[in-house]
Length: 109
Image (cartoon, rainbow, N blue to C red):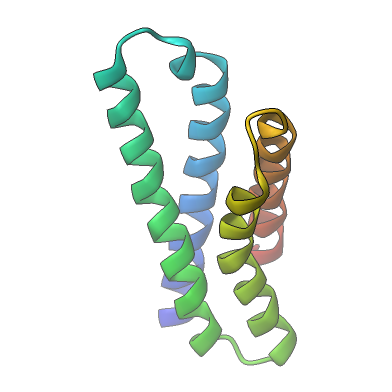
């Protein structure tokens, strides 16, 4: 039961993060109102926290070592991507981040 709840929470947070990232890149981050953009980024950070924490919680719940290692990769890779991204390569790493969210959704289903 706990694993099912964590899987649903992980999948929902990944879906919301994917949608918010795509919508943000298309519309929000071009706006001239810094307060609105700041609030939007704070919401992304909140859902990113839920995504990472549920991935870490799933490490303790899932039975196989392969599943545990995949959840660890899903929990850590957003921080590695953020560390490697620069201003010039931000578009590519954002696309890679969205692809990672989609792969994690597919994996958890």
